[in-house]
Image (cartoon, rainbow over all chains, first blue to last red):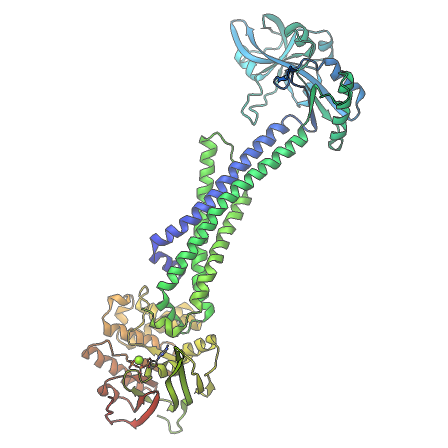
Length: 397
Length: 238
Ligand SMILES: Nc1ncnc2c1ncn2[C@@H]1O[C@H](COP(=O)(O)OP(=O)(O)OP(=O)(O)O)[C@@H](O)[C@H]1O
Ligand SMILES: [Mg+2]
């Protein structure tokens, strides 16, 4: 019965549904974009490892002109060693430097970023070598010219041949390849994590880059609950070592990646909710559209209602007839809206520069919302219809 | 007709008052009336005398302001809306001047409509509706929509609908008012044969030659019944 009534006014029913379709579609598309941003952020931070603290040099500040963060040169390898020695509850300390160089093998060449690291880098980033071995303690102590290369570098320089044991030239200095890293693929931010050359930290600092400072120190804390304590200990220790007293500003930065991740994930959740609510408003507007059309429909069908009542329809019979109609609009609109929303978010994911994530929750919520809206905004018109006086309804022209 | 005559309708002191502005108008002003089972009563009277108002009350579409109405021995003057709806569904069949068929559904579905609200399942609905369409000679028009039928055919569909739930009483308010002479004759023949089968019929009409078909003629004037005659008398309405 509801379907015949809706089919009798196809165009009108469709336009009414359009409000719901757009509403549900918008909620799903918006939320999926929001969730996509969130998962990007969370993935990129958590790919650094869990329980991470990152120490970086502060910015230079000469005559009130502040340089870029990390532009100072006062974070030393010895600072990292001291942290490792003196502070408790730390699993790994991994100081590192990096710079881009031309890498040459035979007549092949490739531009890649060269990182100087200690052996602990492997544990902290959970790296694996597919062939050969990683930088060892003694490589680092002896400033050996050895290199572990990422798989992208390997294929570009060596093709299918085995790089281990071969010599490559980095900034015109010979380095012996001792290992190839297991492929990690793209990072969630779209960087190729396999396009890297790893050399011992001391080799990089003294032989390659001529630096007496490191660009960052990654620290893995053994227990998530100790993060704040360890962070404070590091700050105290570094202030001591750098002879910063009283209220003077730190010349370094310690960032807590876990709390950064929490903040970012909270922010992006807020963003998602905001996007979803804005889209949700259009859903409510769609509901008002349903109510509007149902009111028109009740007025138009006053005579029909009168006839049905004269033939024995009760309050409940008429109420149900109109409620079912508006709920059917909500359900069909909701289903088409889900299709539209999912399609839209896949298109955005494919052709836009966004990751989109469709989870069942927003789909379910917006669907039940649309059914609920059909119900809610149908009640008033349906009651109006059911309460009509049969004599007056029959007399209606 | 049986010898022990059962009283189907019994009205006592029925009044219907309307407030127009701050004045009370009595559309019905004290009606006492008994109608026996199987009677064919014609209500006559000038325009505005209260015939339709009386029919609405008899048909349980409306409640009297004052008075008692016993239908089948049961007091119905103060039933709730839903109880009145149920009573209409089970005991009363309506035939209206302007047919009042639903325009978007077929003749058969129109006839079956009272059975929907009586809770009859769809197979039986169709079967019973078809039977009564045959009775009014429209079996071949079952799938037609009302706008594909002539006025006389529409009124026959409406009569089939009034009969479908086997009600005690058929109420018809000027059923031939919108019909030509030929259709009027056909419709009145159907009423005659219903009467012969023993159904109680109450019919409002303006035309004396229709009223003479009835077994009893009632004249309403200014909200009261002024004459109550048997078959054969020709009442002067105006
Ligand atoms: N809802 C109402 N409000 C006020 N007055 C009403 C209402 N319904 C009917 N009346 C009045 O009651 C009186 C009887 O009306 P009713 O419709 O019963 O007349 P009728 O005998 O059926 O006339 P007709 O032959 O023209 O159909 C009229 O004076 C009418 O104005
Ligand atoms: Mg009338």
